Length: 365
Image (cartoon, rainbow, N blue to C red; front, side, top):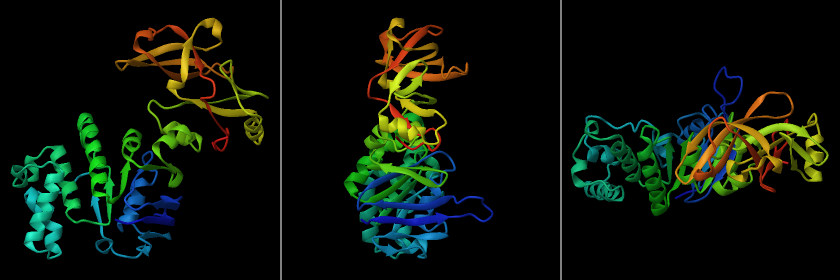
C-alpha cells in the first residue's frame, strides 16, 4: 500500500492551446479508493497515465510514498493497471495471462501458482476458467482476468482506466460492487477513472471532479452531492442533474420563474459583485414538490414522465426570466402522483434545499 501525491503536475501536449492536465494538486491516502471523474476530454485518463508513467509530466511532480517518480520508468513504479480493453494476450490461457508478469520477474513457479490461484479465488473464477483462452470468455470474465493479472503482482497502487465501459448495464452494476468490495478486502491504494458519475459516487471513498484539465473539487460522494463547490460540479454530480438556472437577482433572493428563492444578505452581496443583476440557483429533483395552482409554484408543462417503480421523474418546460425562452425542469414524485404528458403542473422548491452560485464565475455563494 502507498500514498500518491500529484504536486502541481501538468501535461501539455505539443501544439495544444491549453494543458491537458493543469497544475493538478491531489493527495491520495494509503489504501484509499479515489475516483477521477469528468466529461470526455477533461484530463482524467491523462492524469492516470501520468501516474503510470505512460505520459510525460511537463511541470510539477508525482510522488508514490513520498518518493518522486516523475522520471521513473513505468516498470519501476510498482503499479498495476487495468485498461478499458483488458489487453489480454489472445494466444495465452487465463492462467498464463495472469502469470505472465510474474514469469518476467523470474518469480518461482510455486509462488506464481499460489498467487494466480489466490487471485482466482478472490474473483470467484472456477478452475475450468483458468485453462480457457480469452476468445472463449464473456466480457465480464475477461474483465475479471484483467483484474486478476493486476492482483497477482501485489502492487503498491492499482490504476483502473474505465474497466467497466465494455460491459452491459446489468453487469456493470454487478461488477462495480465486486470491485469496490475487493479493493476494501485487499486494502490497496486505487485510482479509478470513469466518465460515469453514478459509478464514481457508488465506488469511491472520495471523488475528484475534473473539467478542462483543472481539479474542480475532491471530497466524499455525500459532500460533493450536498455542497458542490461550483455550478459545474452541482450539475455534473447527481442523476438526473440538478435544476440549475441563471435568473434575476432581487434584494432578498432569486426570482425563479415567479417564485422567490430566498438568499442570505451575504449571498445577495456576493452575487451583485460583477454579476450583472443575475444569480445562478439550483435545486435537485427530489427537493421540489408539485403544488396547487394557488400555492405559488412555477408553471411547468409536462413533456415526459419516467416511471421508475415507486417514483417517477417528471420533465417539463417553464418560462423563466420573462424572456419567453423555455427551460426544462425535473421533479421527482411518487409514481401514483405522476401527471400526464401535456398537463400544466406547479413546481415549488422546498425551503432551504437550494444552492446558489455566482452567475459569472460559478463559484458557490
